[in-house]
Image (cartoon, rainbow, N blue to C red; front, side, top):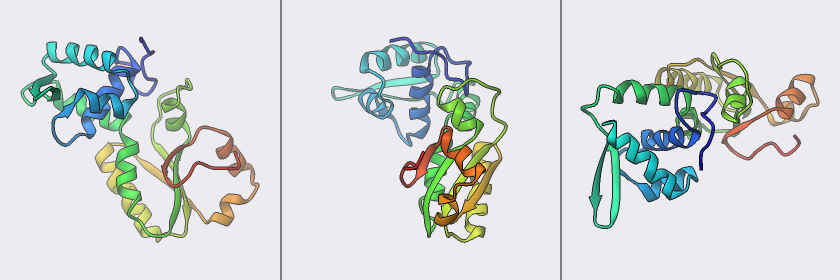
Length: 195
């Protein structure tokens, strides 16, 4: 199954290849092809084919553990570090933000909105210059800005939060309606119900 290149990082030959590499970037140890397929919802046969290409190119290392095929990035490849940084910066904000924001007290929900959310959802446009976050709840402002700074350092991209209480988020302002009518990527909490 051939998929179009991802709009956030169109240098990949397909969205499937980018999803596979993103899944591998999240793994802290060698990962099975079955697990990659499960995490990405990419069919096993496609995972196997794409991984074979990356192994042949020397970017990944492959091994067998019992019946399972496991892969990891090749630490000796000169492409590994820059490739991981590209993936992390363009395709990896969701897990990074989830890690940082899920531990902050008094957050009801967090969404990525704006150009990053649109490109990640396949809507054409210029590359995003930053990541816009909508934080709903009553957290400490210093916790939110601290998490945004930490995310920015890890992602090499500016993370801009807007913090609103639940009541402010429910208001029918032009801004709220605009945000709710466009693409949102859930980081913490539930997807907006009144879109």
